[in-house]
Image 1 (cartoon, rainbow, N blue to C red):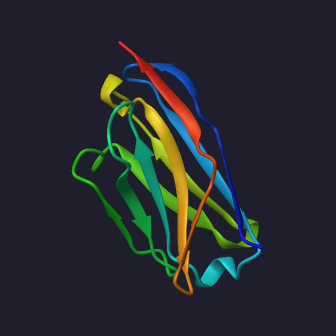
Image 2: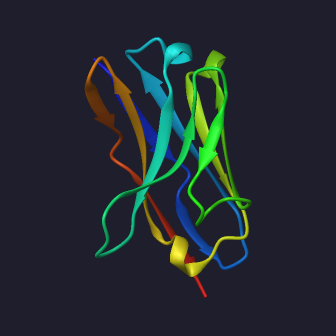
Length: 115
């Protein structure tokens, strides 16, 4: 059974930093492209960063240059380093995996950025 567990969210002032983690189990982690999504209050869930199985990355324009996605295959863990946070980054952040035609999601971790 695939499980994704996020951690690292919290309250931070604008301009601050946080690092989110997503620990995966039940999959061959090193083979799996993975994503970070976020959902702000009243808005749709949006894809913000993606990392391929060999480490290629892509970002939404809204986070490019401030956020960095990475992975440690030995630890079955994906990370999102978030720098220069803005109030508009306030959202629940979700780890996502698509494998064999099935979407898997973590329960999310809340990031709140105060102005």
